[in-house]
Structure formats: C-alpha cells, structure tokens
Image 1 (cartoon, rainbow, N blue to C red):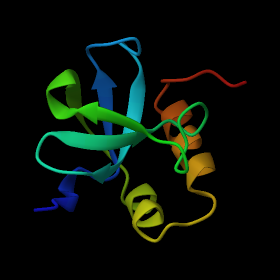
Image 2 (cartoon, helix red, strand yellow):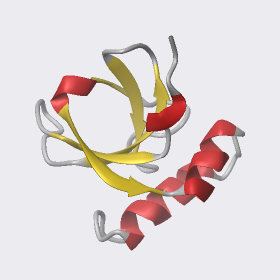
Image 3 (cartoon, rainbow, N blue to C red):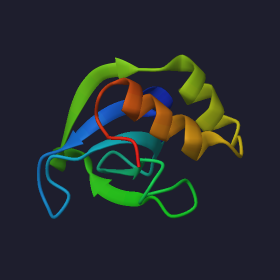
Length: 93
C-alpha cells in the first residue's frame, strides 16, 4: 500500500536527534515510515528513515522536485538542497 502523495513534501522533524530539521520526503515505505533527504547530510543514496508520527507535515510541495524524485534524476540532491534553501531552511555552505 504505497501512497505517493507525500513524495516531494517538506516535513519538519519533531522528535529525535534531528529535531527541528527540515527534510523532503523521497519515498513512503508503509503507513508508518518514510525516507527523507535534505541534499546535504541525507542524500537520495543514503536517506533517513523516520516514523510519520515524529514529523510535522508542511503544505510546501514542489511539483518539479517531486517529478525529479520519481524519475530518479541524478541532480535530485542538488534540487532538494536548493529547494530547502529557497524556503529559508538551510544556509549556504
């Protein structure tokens, strides 16, 4: 039962070591778990697994980013990082 409506949505971690960090949902494993990336420390190759109950779902969704994730574009990590930066979430490195 995979639900793709969360893919590409920005989320905020509300529990754990990464509390307060923003991520983009790149995959939904089941009704309880998703895989997250931020383009820098958590990439498409090494995403973070997190329970949905430990996340705050935002209304921020980028269709271009979503399509990039679904098509497994090689520049997706860069697009994720750029999207978070444009929303004022991360600073430039």
